[in-house]
Image (cartoon, rainbow, N blue to C red; front, side, top):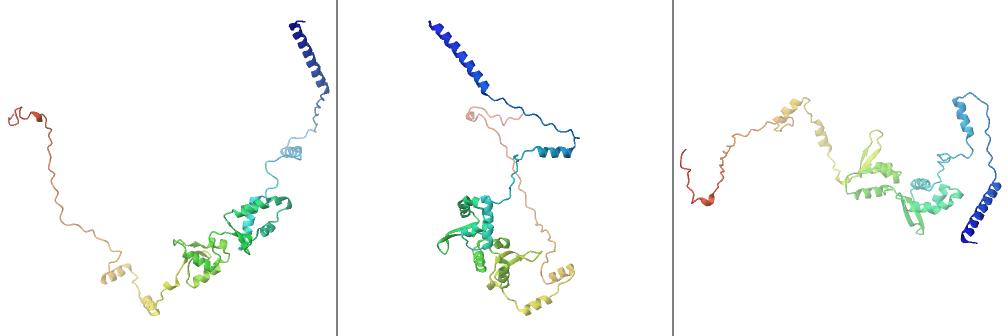
Amino acid sequence: MSLKASFNSFNSEFSAATTRNTQQQQQKRPTATVPTPVQRPSTPSTQPTDLKRKRQDLPQNAAYSQPADTGSGREVMTQVVYAIDYLKSKDRPTSFTDIWNYLSIPANQQQHRQVLRRALMEHPKVDYDPKGLDGQHPSFRFRPVHNVRSADDLKAYLQRQHTAQGISVKELKEGWPDAIPEIERLEAKGELLVVRQKKDNIPKMVWPNDPSLDQRIDQDFKDYWTKITLPANPSDLRIELEKAGITPTSQVKEVIKVSGAKDKKKRTSRKVGRSTNTHMVGILKDYNAVKK
């Protein structure tokens, strides 16, 4: 058999085998069943009925964009906020075990224990001390804006300030809940200068004060000062000041004129002429003297 005849025989056998395989696969494949539509009785189309029908047609496991549980508080960062509020209310070094027990995290969330511990250790509102409890166990404590928790701390803190800006009482109460009674006690002793709110007379800002600089005035001088009466009429007050040789602030200032005007200098005109042929002065004849 020649090469061409062998090639034609191979192609015919390959085509026949391909056709047989295709027919066998079609016979084994199951036929797809087409669901028959459910016929419903015709009802008048009203908007409430259509909305109710749409709700009934939704499957039980339909996915929504809004999760069902949004306020469980089981996320790690949410627990960090709760833990900081707990430390703020305690105002003392606290162990991580006490914090964990306070949060009451479910048993299926125990894997977040180390993550929560690391988050509290690195939080800017928390002071972490590796040996804060009995010098052996680590502790956590709330870190306020101003590290002041007593009257002595407040006086020392105010003395270290480089400006006279003052300290807000609201910021002091963040780490020192009993700040207002102590501030009022220090104010009565003359160790603090306090500015109060006009509405409820609560301390608003505090500054340091030195009681040794408080100068006492004799009562005789105070009585003499209160006996001095001022004229009720402003014009009479001005006259009395002028009699005493005191210039009143309400006096109109007169403009002082300077006598003699300065002589103005006469400006000399300069005639600037352009000279040419300077290299031929000795050769050319000068005709400037000739009158026209």
